Amino acid sequence: MNRGHLIAGLALLAGTTAQAQSIMLLNVSYDPTRELYTQYNKAFGAHWEKTTGQKITFQQSHGGSGGQARAVIDGLEADVVTLALAYDVDAIAAKGLIATDWINRLPQNSAPYTSTILFLVRKGNPKKVKDWDDLVRKDVKVITPNPKTSGGARWNYLAAWAYGLKKFNGDEAKTAAFVGDILKNVPVLDSGARGSTMTFAERGIGDVLLAWENEAFLAFDEFGKDKFEIVAPSLSILAEPNVAVVDKNVDKKGSRKVAEEYLKYLYSDEAQDIIGKNHYRPRDPKAAAKYKASFANVTLITIDDVFGGWQKAQKIHFAEGGTFDKIYKPGN
Amino acid sequence: MSMPGAGLTARLAPAAVQAARSESPWLRWALCGVTFAFLGLFLVLPLVTVFVEAFSKGTEWYWNALIDPVTIASIKLTLLIAAVSVPLNTVCGLAAAWAITKFQFRGKSILITLIDLPFSVSPVIAGLVFVLLFGLQGWFGPWLRDHDIKIIFAVPGIVLATVFVTFPFVARELIPLMQDQGMGDEEAARVLGASGWQTFWRVTLPNIKWALLYGVLLCNARAMGEFGAVAVVSGHIRGLTTTMPLHIEILYNEYNLAAAFAVASLLALLAMVTLAAMTVLEWRAAQSRDLPAETD
Image (cartoon, rainbow over all chains, first blue to last red; front, side):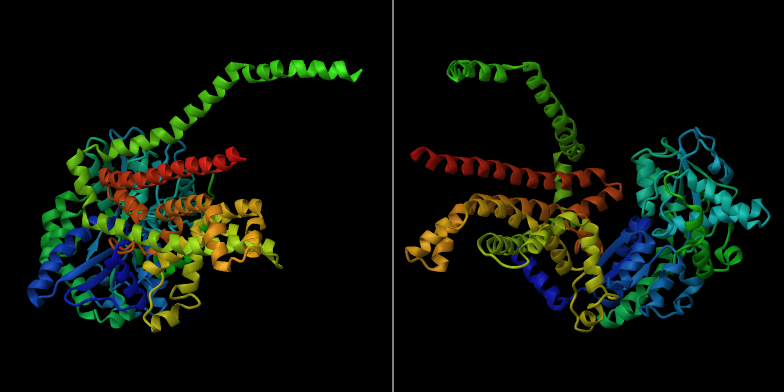
C-alpha cells in the first residue's frame, strides 16, 4: 500500500529503528495527563533542542495507571513512566526493569507535582453531596474507576478509607462497611480515570464523580462551568503521581541522557508553571503560590501516615483477596 | 376415485397459490415495517449521527481533523495492516478450503473447527494470547528482546492479532460453495490432460471467484475495523501503533468529539464502500449463475 510505511514496518520487524537526526522518547503515562504532557513535551523539546541541537520525537501512551505498568512489564519500551502512584512504578521495578531505589533518584519522592481527590457534582448539587458521608446514601450514584486497573481509583478508595478511619476512630470493621456502602452505589467501574469522567460528564450517568482534582477542573474547562460544580470534602488524600526512567529500556536504546533530563526538567520553573496551569499542584513554592487560588482548600492526609506506604496499602487493600475484593460485590 | 380428487387439486392449485401469496397483506406490510423501522433505528440513525457529529464544526474543520499528522499516521497504519493481513488470509483461507473440500484425510473435522476458532474466541483473548507468547514475561519475550525484535506493542503484533481475528472469513465463504461444486469439473479437466496449476487457474478459480472476492471484502472490512484484539497488543503509542479504531477512542477520551467522529466517518465510509462493492459482487454473481441456466 504505502511503500514507505511498509519499509518502516519491515524495519521495525528487523528491529532497526531508523533514528538519524531526531531522538525518540516514549512516555508511558496514566489517563488524565494527556493535556499536561502535550504541553510539557513542546516546552521540553524546545529546551533540549536549544541546549543540544537535537530534535526529539515524542511518543505518548495513556491509559489506566495499573494497565500501563502492566504493558511496560510486558515489553512496551517506555523510556520514562509517569504513573499515578508509586506502587505501579514498584511493580515495574519488581520485574527488574527499573532500579528499586527509583523513588529517591529525584526530589520529593520522584513526584514533581501532586494532586488530590475531589467530588464533581451536577450544577446546583441536586443531591446535596457535601462530604464522604453523603456517598453512602441510597439515592446517590457514585462514579469511580476500577482500583485494579486505575491509579486514581486507588486514591479515591484510600481517601474514603482515611475518612472512615477518622469518623469511626480507627475502627477497621466499621470503615470497611462504610467504604463497602459507597461501592454499592457505583453503577459502573471504568478501567481508567478518563473513562469515568466520560461516563459522568458525556454520558450523564451518576450524581457524583470521585475525580482527580485536575480531572475535575479539566471537565470544567471542556464542558463549561454551567454544567458541574466541584465539592471539596472535609478530608482527602495527598496524591503523589511518580515519575521514573525505565533503566533497562533506556540502556538498551541509548536514551538515558535525554530521559533523565526529561524528568529533571519537570522541576524547572517553566515546567512547574505548565503543571499549575493544568491544575496539578506544583512542588515549586513560587508556582504553588501563583496557582494557590485555583485549588480547593482541603485537609490532606498522606499515604505514608495513614496507610504506611504504598506497598502495604496495595497488599492489604488491592491485592487478590484484599479488602477491595471482600467488600466489592458487583451487581447489587 | 382418486382422479376427480387429483383434478380438483390441480384445478384449485393456481388459486390456492394465489391465495397463499395474497394472504394477509397486513402481515407482509407489518413485517416490512418492523424490519425497516429496526434497521432505521439501529443502523441508519447511528450512522447518520456519526456524519452529523463529524461535520458539526463545518467542512473546513472536518478536513483539518483528517489531515492531522497523527490521524494520517493511523489511516496509513490501518491500510498497512489490511494490506498485509488480507492477502495472507486470502491465500491461507483458499488453501484451507481447498484441502477440506477436495481431499479426504484424518482430522478434517478438527481442522474445520479450528478455522472457526477465531469467531468463537473473544478478540481480547486473541490479543492476550500474543502478549503471553511474545510479551517480555511471555515464552519468547526475553529471546526477542535479546535479539532486538519487536512483536507486540509494535506493527508486527497488530498484524498478528488482525490475521488471527480475520482468518475465518475467506475459508468460511469458500467451503460451502466448494463442497457443493464437488470434484467433477476438476476431474474432467485432469482427464482432458490439464496440469494441476492449469486446473486451478482455469477451472477451480473461475468457479469460486465471486465467493472468494466476497470473503476478501468481509475480511478487509474486519481487518480495518478490529478493535479488541488490536487494543491489547497496541501499547497505544500515538501516531505509531494506533489504528483508526484506537485513534477514534483516544480522540473521544480527549474531549475531541468532532475529530473522533470525523475519523469515525472516514472508517464508516470505508465500510460502506466495502458494502457497496459486495452488493455489486452479489449482483454479478447472481447474473453469472443465471446465464448458464438460461442456455440449458
